[in-house]
Length: 286
Image (tube, rainbow, N blue to C red):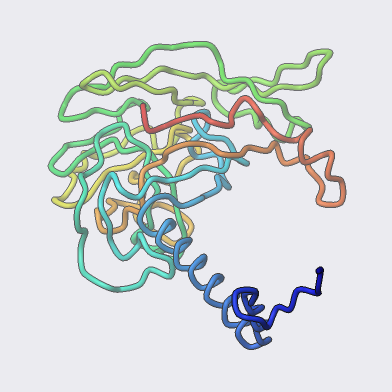
């Protein structure tokens, strides 16, 4: 004879339904999740990689205005400037190695420790550096230089390509282009990279610098439009010798690049302005 199944009878008791979480428990759960996420993000940004953008042309043609790159934190160890807000947790650097000639680093200027800068390492501690007719002399020997094809960039106006040195304005059916003399420069050991040189400027001839212990001599790849170690440190200007404590990390990879023509109210322009050929460029293997 059939009868109704009674959940309260022995052997037929179903698992009791869990009591619904209170609003407070749900809120605390979300707060724990967000706090954990923020902590992981902080650790990632402090110990592994951090994002930076290129706002000026001092590293052209290697890096362009509108490039967004990750800087790797682990190659050089850590200092107070490795952490958000430059938390003063210890003195000097701990762990990791030190930059080599030719590497591109992100750092804080001795005169402006609130802003991030990016330049190329030319001189190590103890090196003698002098610029003669635009060519760096390293420990008494000029760096090898080879003239290669001009660097060609589109411009909207003749004012964007000033009549300076050997810079030329090229007019074509596709628009106007500014052409700047480009060279392939090679350091002792074989590391090479492209630099721009518009011709003779006041920074093309300097006295000899001796890099102090624990410091580095840095230059931009756009040699005549870079305020670098050739100039005394000033906020927003020259950087002088950069202490190793001020190094934030090593330029790693470009993760986004835009030519600046995008509009926030036009999502399609976000993609048309992207420089897809620059995304993924890896500077860790230079």
